[in-house]
Structures are given as structure tokens and as C-alpha cells.
Image (tube, rainbow, N blue to C red):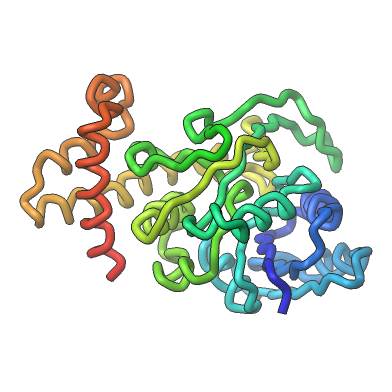
Length: 300
């Protein structure tokens, strides 16, 4: 059994899958399995690309779905196809620095890392456009500054309740926590990673390494095709399912008689309105404890 499983979800994006293969195949860490989930796309294209895999000492598992089942169902299928202790989602359109796996696995296996259920790295946002079959990078910028830690930080639960702060490409997590929360919710067409992160934080903490080792690629100008990002091409779905996920928390808070928490979560996206109170330590710790208790009920 390989120590890590790298799960790649793809559908008819062969140009990007080829780039992802270079990113994964170029890792300095080699104790991993690559699991590719073709979620309803042309299997011939995926198989052709994977035939070019050069790291013969590293196994590749391919899961073909005849019909598209959605991102979170694809994640669950990929994880079910392997047995590794550490898991990470490397989508076909994102990339890593060559030492991402080396650094993250090393941390979780260190004495300090045993206290954490997952580890996150700093992330670079890469804006790009498609020019035929070529991807051209337009700009790079630091992304999600609120998760920075020196020398090692920790994700704030109160920040993640407001909005998701990081992309799957930057997070390595333990299989045991995936099992505890019941995996990803396949009913969510978008924001399944946010839902998963909230549930993960109910079980334990996420460390933050202050190194930019993950690259989160955006194509805001590409809409209505397979090559768009869900965060841009599916912006309306994000608006709807932001409410769906948030409403679950609010309903549970109301059921517990906690109207203050319900109000804070419902207003959570408006950081300006809450910034004066949200980051006061006495309030954050109190709200964090209540949110954990409520979310544990949701996944029990």
C-alpha cells in the first residue's frame, strides 16, 4: 500500500489532464498512488494520456464513470478505489510545486504534525486563458492570505464559517478523518469542499505551512465549456449552494435555541458588517465551540 493517494477528477479536459500528470509525476516524494476518476468523459482520451505516465514505480488507478456523477461523488469513488493513509484532491486543472507531497507528508508525520488531522499550504492563484489547445498564464498572485501561519499556523474555524478559505489542491488530509465525516456530500454540485472542510474541523485542526506549494488555476473568461472553473462557470450554483450549506448550520442553531449563532452565520459572508466583532478573541472562541457542537450533530 502506498502512503498517499492523489485523486484527480476529470472530464474531457485532456489538455489539463496532461499538465496535471506533469505536476504529479514531477513530485520529489514517490510513495503515492495516482487515482484518476474520469467522470463521464471520453475514456479513450484519458487512457491515451495515462499511457504516457513515466513513473512506472508509481501505480495509476483509473475509474471510468459512464455518466457524470459530480465532483464529490468522483472524489468518493477515487478514495474508495485506494487504501492510502493520506489523501489529497489534485484536480486536472491545478498544479503543485515539486515538493508539495514531500513537505506535507513530512509535517503530518512529525511530532508536531500528529496533533493535526490535515495540513494546508499557502496557495498561488494563477489566472490563465485558453488559446485553442494551449493554456497561457496571465498573472500570478498570492491567494487566501487569512490562512498564513509562521512558522506553522492553524486554520480558524470562525474564518471558514464565513466562507471557504482554500482550494482542495492545497490540502493533504488523513483517511481517518475522511471516514469519520462520511466523505464528501455527493448531493452538492458545488461547494462540497467547503462542506467537507467544515466537517473536518469538527474532528480536529488543520495546520498551515507558510510555503506556497499549491497553484490554484482560474480561467474567469472561460464559461460554458468543459475548460471553465466551477467557481466562475458555475457562479450561480455557488450562490445557491452557499445558502444550502449555510442554511443547514442555521437550522441546527435555531433548533438549539441559539439565535445569536444563527444570525452570525447568516451574515457571515459580509465581513465588513461583522469585522468589528468577528475577530475579537473572546467571541471567536465562544462561537467556534458552539459551531463545532452543532456541526457534530449534523454529521452524527
